[in-house]
Each structure stands twice: as C-alpha cells, then as structure tokens.
Length: 79
Image (cartoon, rainbow, N blue to C red):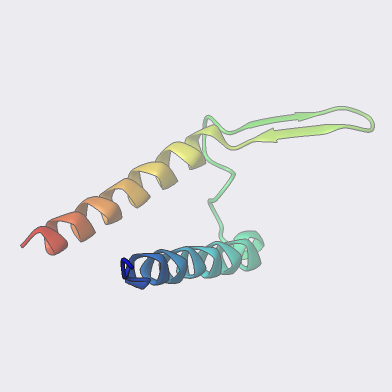
C-alpha cells in the first residue's frame, strides 16, 4: 500500500485560508481606503435604477502588486 503525504494539501489550504482572510480584510476596509476604486480609468456608469462599476485601473494596480509579492515569494523559496 502506498503512503502519501497530506502536507501539500495542508499547505495549500493554509495559503487559501490566508488569501481569504486578506481578501476579507480588504473588503472590510474598502470604504475607508481613499483612492481604491476612484482612480482615473475606473469605470462608473449611473442611471436611474442601475449602477455599473468596473474598477479597471484599480484592478490592474492590484494585479501588479500581487504579482510582485508572488515574485518575491518565489525568489525567497528558490534560494
């Protein structure tokens, strides 16, 4: 019978849990952040009973920040 390790699964669940925690904290303080969602390039369309909101520039900046963090973590783990 093969014995397999649950360590990779455990590490993935811890990482996902940490990511969900960080996302929850960001959403909790989203209204208090002065520039998030109000950058040039963020799209807001308001009509009588409808609001469409797409924070394009904010998403691009957050993507670059998360990519840089992942790159740093990869460099640290690689050495």
